Image (cartoon, rainbow, N blue to C red):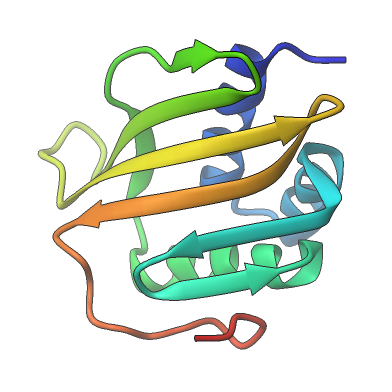
Length: 128
């Protein structure tokens, strides 16, 4: 069972995975059966919908990557993960915070906060 710090790092890495099959496999490994992702522009329930959110983010922000902004703050079954979305070597265009809730070594819920909040363009599998 991975520790929550490593789970947080792998979670952020899944946002950067460009190969659809590899990304979907990561989602399957990282997320619990009852997974739910919520941020200001997306609500995704289940692994397929979460994968759609990641794919949509990659299409909306081509050439950009998610990177950690400091170390994850971890306690109990929770992690607070600060991140940035930026072009390689460039300044952040979005700064975010994700609160990860885990259970049995997998992500159960992730609550995301964005600054600034991009205009809404939900993924096909997400609801809102």
